[in-house]
Image (cartoon, rainbow, N blue to C red):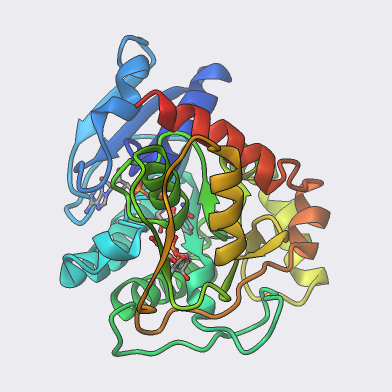
Length: 322
Ligand code: NAD
Ligand code: UDP
């Protein structure tokens, strides 16, 4: 029997790669999206596939369908976009996962929820393991996203404990690659677009803050490995590791300062006339971020394989063509 998957946020950066992967594996795929930050450009190639359906819908409104697997990705992820409409951001995060969990409860679907390293806030523990509770401002400009994602995790945890919903949470650390929107506003797409168009490279703060960048293919492999595990394997694993619910970090632990990223981008676009300029650091910008991926390595028998210079080269090649 053909397996059916629903991807909320399926026209976004990660969602469109996941849709392609699931179609390649023979799934029937429905991509639900309201196109807030996603675009049909990402899924043009998929629309011709008879096993692919696009559903223009807002995840905060209930929806129905019988699916084997639901991937909940709907939510703006770039600071400039989630801060553009903060009330809608927290509503999307909370109501979206609520609608997904209710559907999963009624239809016994398996759910993967896209959480984020942002739930650790500006972390006081480095690198960040899943057992760290985070350091998050509840009323800052990033809070609509951070607290929305934290509340979404709480809902997932309670549907798991109270109703036995088969939920798997992934705390995704900065992920990049082709299909990021050219105006997405996140650092890798910004730097590449600026360098390709000879515009100033906008380094916020002194550029000493760090991030750990994961290439999209590594993330999709982790998603698929996680969703293939049977519930009893996951329950045994969380019991053995003293975790209350299934939650893992995925990311690439290679840690770079943002200044190093700017320099590497310029090194890979040698014809660029761009200069690095310094702009104020946005409020509550985390100073350091690096995933502890011990649990993901052991549970999924997975590890990231694409180093930043290689992933950056593939991403630059994509942006040269858009
Ligand atoms: P993206 O902005 O490209 O994708 C998000 C998608 O969700 C878009 O297609 C957007 O139109 C859609 N969407 C937003 N609000 C919606 C709503 N109310 N109803 C229906 N669709 C809606 O970003 P992405 O990087 O692909 O992120 C996907 C998910 O992964 C998000 O939940 C994000 O929080 C999470 N995540 C991403 C990263 C990363 O580095 N890329 C890191 C951590 C977490
Ligand atoms: N950043 C930057 N210039 C930009 C965009 C972002 O220096 O044009 C910095 C930003 O301040 C942060 C880091 O790059 O320290 C990562 O930012 P991004 O918005 O990609 O993701 P997040 O802060 O959510 O990790």
